[in-house]
Image (tube, rainbow over all chains, first blue to last red; front, side):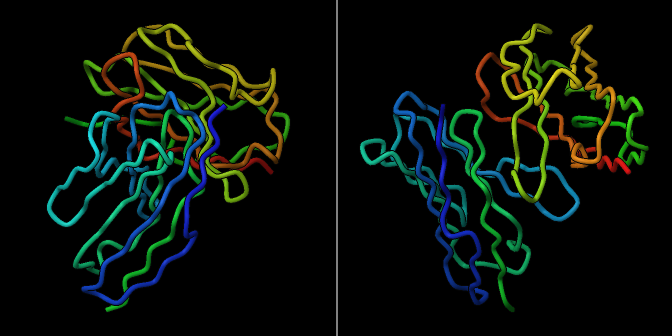
Length: 106
Length: 114
């Protein structure tokens, strides 16, 4: 089955700085690469996704980049704001990573 | 749109009791997923349905767990008998299509088994 690793497990940044979270996977057949954001007491919410035929996708302050050869994809958040503080999950296939707790310090 | 609806939001029960969790997917979505989230194991897929048919139940922990989807707008996850180690937050999610693209999660049910 799919083996998913997510790094780092925790990340603290100053407001306005950038944050990058990396996800590696093992199943070369994976073709869908989403990132979810989970706030306290809520269910995960899809924030951005990418299909295997695209290398990068941007949506305002967030972007996802995919390297299928190396089997990893990354979430990039620029100009971070306190409301970006949450736990972020990658989920190639139906396997979720362990999550990255992002804290944005004002 | 009301989003995915789960009930109850919180459930406290004693070991050995039967627990039934309920989910109403987003109208028009034809795939439904049940997940369990704990600190130790993270977010785990238990089972998913497509067009009301179970496709993959390999994540169901043991025979004490069962899930049904009698129609396109309702699903249940049942635990009988419940054990303290079943304490977790259970999420239901739905999506459109056969693949697990763009899943929309419900608010979850926090289950505590004493």
